[in-house]
Length: 295
Image 1: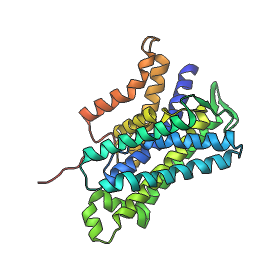
Image 2: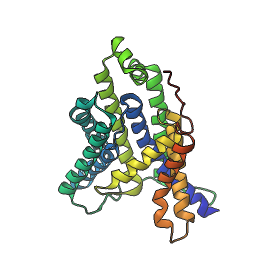
Image 3: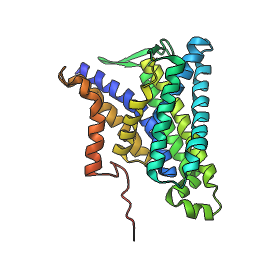
């Protein structure tokens, strides 16, 4: 039973980070109607920002956290302005190919700058360990859970109760009608990318705090799993996306723990298998709403 609870703790940690990344995916897709497959690589860039500020420059934890969020936010705005805005009225296939190209561009820049060697970032955030009976709970795990929950609540409040958030909802429902009502669509989408990329920066902080490593390909698979979590929970629904991320993390951790040794390397495919099953059975996700289009 103690081993089981340890796997559950690992799953909650991983799932909370997935949820945070998936929130960024969900915002961009729900408002801009595009899949930003470079979102995972923005997390990787944030991880390297932490590596430079914390280890190479030795500027401390606070400077590393701020640098990660700022670098990721600015990178999201630059990508939106240079790569996606010119394709605002292009076909979805063109936007998808561009997103994949941006992802590979970021990966190769990281390879040229930092090489393919795995960078260890030990001692980034140290917190005491707690015991609840036989269950050991790392302080970093508690930090991850509280941060993810706080961001989810704050983001939901922002979208539902602020002028900018309501503008985002309007653009997501009908971009043309929103523009006729005086909403600056380009500005709203840029703000969306800014917030989504800032969430990616925070996700990189939590990821480094828990796993203490970074490499150029960290964001690619991680980002796809987070996208699977968004689809699983219901892309466009903040509670659904958070639930999907946590469930994907739990399932993946339990698969790693209980699959036979011969099948354990295939545990990464669990998220993708869930994505396929959900797309077949319930494309809108667990808490997503099915939209009926009238013709």
